[in-house]
Image (cartoon, rainbow, N blue to C red; front, side, top):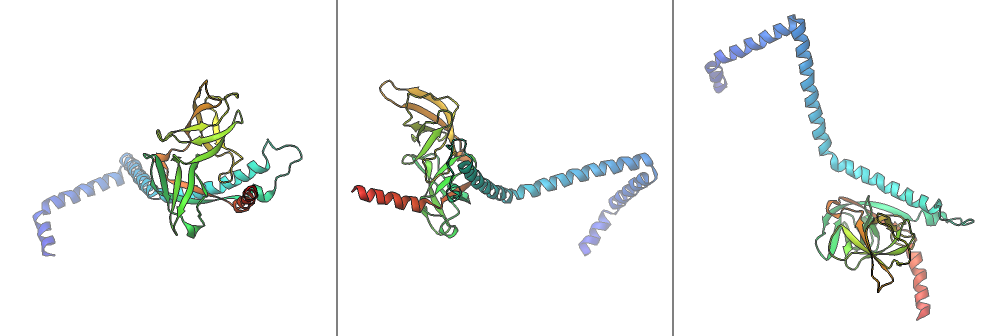
Length: 280
């Protein structure tokens, strides 16, 4: 308290000057219409600027929450699109009625990427969802833009995904314009490019065409983007194209993914295993 009194005493002339300046400004604004309007407009401008900055800071701090909400909404839309593509596809032959349970077999779980590799020959991704959230090995994983990989290992709260940027990962893919089916497989080099193999050179392949997941896939829903045709070459000694796709997913900036569950996968695999046993 004594220090405060000492400060006021030592700076009394300056404090009186500031008080008189403030009083003068207040009297001018109060008794002069022009300066009153100027002060009002100026103060409103700076108050609006301050509020805008405050709102920007608040919105920035909520980006994680906003992204999580958008990811959840995208998961719902993915499920809806997958169902509609099965029931209203323009490629369905006349008289074919799709089974409703088959059309609605895919559901999605949103997960956040907590670790991601892109610079190795065999890259993996770690997400923050595990067996406690219904995640199991073998489930497909996609992003908002395309295919990501497949779940390999799970703990209670985390899962490791074999990325599409992995030498042992292949996904059945279809070229949209030519309808040709092949396999997308990474060559271990550029994380933005992937090869598409086993596409016959006796069909037309268009540069810029989209490659999507095919219907012959039990892990991924059909028509999920894999990439776009960037380069096409033909080896005279081979019967297949050498096709390079530019990946639809930017793995370096991957934040949220969707783990895909096929509720009819076990039934399908069990039936297939019986066929294999009969061949032995």
